[in-house]
Length: 554
Image (cartoon, rainbow, N blue to C red; front, side):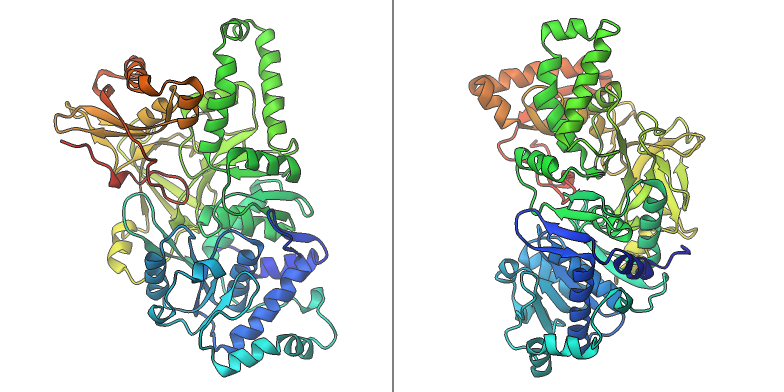
């Protein structure tokens, strides 16, 4: 059990950092100091009490990234309830299924999202509050709840007659063994399951971050990841809130220029993001420079190459605000070419690895000590096993157990038993190797691994990463045909196609790409054909392609 009590972390942080800025919406004037956040949480606790919400009851939070989303989530867990975050990307039908399956008795929701929901179909939900302005959205609210809402300021001041200061920040007694969240994740391999997370799992993530990543009270972060997803919730929100950081929330992820503008204005001290953003910058801004003839010559001259790479590093660091200590990438693999370039220019980045079932972190190592090609080192509160007779050389399924592990899938014992074995090992579904120090090197998903014509293991993600570094390729999925040959589905980079005017020649350009990449691959990995898609691939909230949706036409 983690020594630090999860809920006490926030009780202490809110009191200690009472007058410091806590949350700001980048696209609106909504903001909170830690004290203002604590006051609003106290108001919501009063409403939960009148609404009859009991300790352990589930309360769903369904909205886009915002300061109010953060306040709502925190109000649930500090009351002693179980938060059920619903990703804003889910359709109303899927969201209602999740809300019903979770047994949520209350809903906090954006006004615009509520318009697509059916109150009658959310059977256990008795009260609905707006994440926009904390108003009542229930069509027929209970009389006592409506009156308490109308008289909330009076009720609040009657309770806190001497005012509300740091000493009034007191939260429910919640042992780390108790459940605080059920997180429904779409994943890349099928239908959502409700991951049951204890306070201990979340405490393990936050405490590890506090011990391993430098972030100090009064510093700044820019929240870009979906907060309803474990990665964003744990590290863009729960971790910084525990240390007194000012988090600016970007909201719905906009175009790259807007993100870069936000970085320049917020100037965060820590960056958490997905690899695809860095890959786009490398491909669209840096590769064209590196591929110029004179540049290819200069970067091979000792001394001069160092100056060039130093300027590139400085420019890239300034792009992200100029004062961050480290960029932590996770949620998907980083292409080897991009990783090699970032290492070459000494850009301060590292790659972590996790999954919702661990709330989410499983491995991490700071950029100064991480190892090339790895996804960090197994956490000191977790254990690692590679299901292979030669775990240092031959890939096997990655198995983990320890403090971060989920309690199971909500109301799905069969799926829980299929994922956590009798010895307590979580079967990740990922394939990889390790080294003597516990660094993890991921090779691919066990469910997406393909067998070559002579039984060779083929990891399509590795081929896809190479494809996505070629001209005119934005996204790719590699599949095997009925003759055990590989073919690729490719979604083109529309901006590059348009800028270079190659629309009618695109098929020919893709054939050139096919020949180029085949020179880099083993014979059994070569591509027979590239198929051009007109639409983007469907993705999960962490930007992983839902590979199970795609097949080759026979």
